[in-house]
Length: 116
Length: 114
Image (cartoon, rainbow over all chains, first blue to last red; front, top):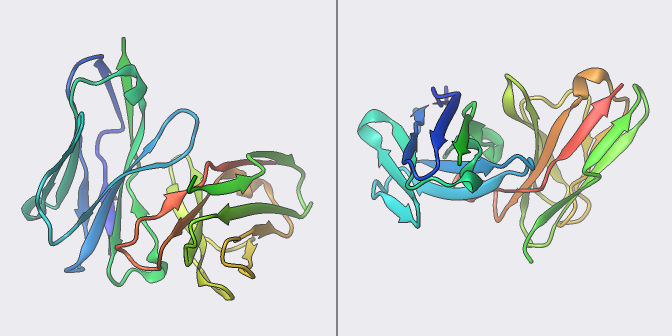
């Protein structure tokens, strides 16, 4: 079975703090793909990043960085110097090679609140 | 601008009154999918389509129908809506079916069934 766990339901930080959102996944597939999506208060789902299981190189995009560790089945997301506009619900998602229907398996989401 | 559009964005209806939520993408994507998002249950796939005239059930297809007559459109049909279909609905599309293709989501449709 495939599963994504985001243990942190809510996180609250003060602006300019760094924050890490945790994501742990389970899959039997040898090839799989991991994603992060952002859902701001307006409700849409915004794609942030995709990572392939065979590429463990970490990635940085501006204030965002992602740490993928196959050994611990984790794909954590760090926001450096957080801003109020980062306030949103963040979803980690998994899709396996043989996943029926190409569906994404989502975690329950982490609600991030950045206070000024 | 490359995008997935959904209409309507908000809808209040009554039990049993047929409705259609439209979804359209302008990226020439082959794969399209519908999800619903509910508190405590997260996001779940309703139906998907790998190409024109090819559709299949996802995890929660009961009470829904879809069609894919054109590549760009993938409407979600509720023949006889019930209150348990009150939800936030998302349409998504990607270049192809398969895990490695990133799915891009529409803005969502908030449906309330009274």
